[in-house]
Every structure is written in structure tokens, then in C-alpha cells.
Image 1 (cartoon, rainbow, N blue to C red):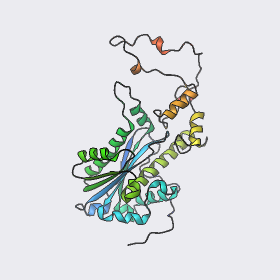
Image 2 (cartoon, rainbow, N blue to C red):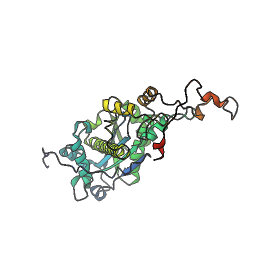
Image 3 (tube, rainbow, N blue to C red):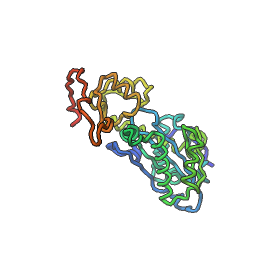
Image 4 (tube, rainbow, N blue to C red):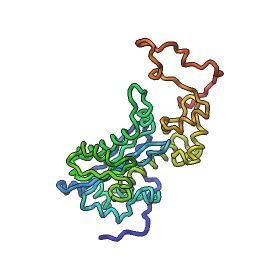
Length: 315
């Protein structure tokens, strides 16, 4: 077996994985690599798959679910490349690993490891979570579960002989594992906390998710905000993120589509900035059938008229 290299691989600073399309779309989308040649050459051999996410907690950018899969007999070989929980790897190491997985010129990882991802955009996350009560909201756990299920189905639909799935979870593992076992009865399912630090195939998925999210966020900032200042990691606890968020509130629109409006952090920022309080038709009480009462109830006569400059919205 080849010995692990101590020297960290150098990645191309301009590398953009195929999972990141430019310009960045506000619409949730998925990307699948072609089936690796080594899996195609052994269609009857069992394949294992790992699942992990990046960006569950941030107020900025997408939540990305990544999967990686390979022949079961190859899975232990992933360790020699240095795959681990992506949070324990340097940014350069993570990017070099994904770049090697995308390298079509005979790289071992490209030949053995397939991967896919779904980027749930900030707009779509918020749209689901902020649905009117009468429709029932689409919470973050449901969105995460559906993304995972669809990714696994996508691999099966491509004819991969999938036999084992390992999933990293932040919630109670038993309930989620039972749900997945019901959907995929012919596959051995393992749902565990810290799976990205335990199973190399989940560590590989972790790299897919983390690098895709990081580069997507970078490209969004370049396109929408240029060099106007850093918005940090996107986590509410990050002082740079908090400063950017509170300093860039439009009183009518709030922010652009990179922001998760369903987060309490954004609601607090809008309140501090004295942004307009909007009332939506679906939230109005129905007094008579097909009647919403007096629209004057939507207006606050105690507030002074506020002139808004929204010229930027049409740019």
C-alpha cells in the first residue's frame, strides 16, 4: 500500500469545482459526477456511500449536502490521502483533495470516487421556513432529509450497486436511521454523530460539501458586493458577519438573496435598522369569505412617511 505523503498538495487558487456554476443561481440545484471508471468496470461489486453537510448554521449562503461513493474494497484507501472531518483540515488541503477528485488525467481519486451535491440556497431555505402557517412550514430538518434522500436516489438511478450508506447527523440518529431504512430497505444504513471523523467515505463527502459551499459563497460575494468589505464566515457569531449584516440593511428589501431571512439574526437586524414592517395577504385574518377586511389595518399612521432609495434593485 502506498505511504501517505506528509507534504500537503498544492491546489490551483483559481480552481472552481463543477458543482459551482457561475453566475451563482438563487435556485436550489444538484450536481452529479460521472460514474467512476473503477465502479463501471466492476458493476457487481458492492459500493458504499457517505453523506455530510456544510453550512447548516450560517445566516449567509447555501446549505450544501455532499455525498461520496466508491467500491467498498477501496474505501480504506481514502485514508492515505488525508481525508478527515473537513473542519480539521486546512482550506488549502480541502481544495486540493476536491481538485484531485475532479482531475480527469488519470488521478486515482477520479477513477475510484464518485460524488454529488445539492446546494440548498438561502432563498429556498427561507422560502420553505417562512411559509404561511395555513400551508405548514418546511423546516430545516425536513429540507436536509429530503436533500439526502434525493441524492441517494440519484446514485441508485444511475445504476450503482449501492449496499451501505453512512450519514453524519446533528440530530437524534435513531429516528433518522429508521426513516432511511424504510425508504431504502435493501441498503445497510448507519446514521451517527461525528461520522465524518469515523468513516473515511463520510470524510470525503464532508470535503465535497465544505469546498462547494466556500467557493460558492466567495463567488457570490465577488459578483454582488465586490471589494466593499468582508462578510466573514457567514455564522451569526462571527463579528465580521454581524458587522456586515447590520451595516447593509435596505429598509424595504433587507438584503439580497444570499441572506437567510428565516434566521432570528436577520429578524433582529431588520428590527434594529427600523426596516419597514410588511404584512402579507396570507397573514391577514379572513373576516368574511374571500374578504380581508380594511386594508388600512396594514398601515401605521403614527409613523412618519419614509422615502426609500431602491434604485439599486433595478440594476
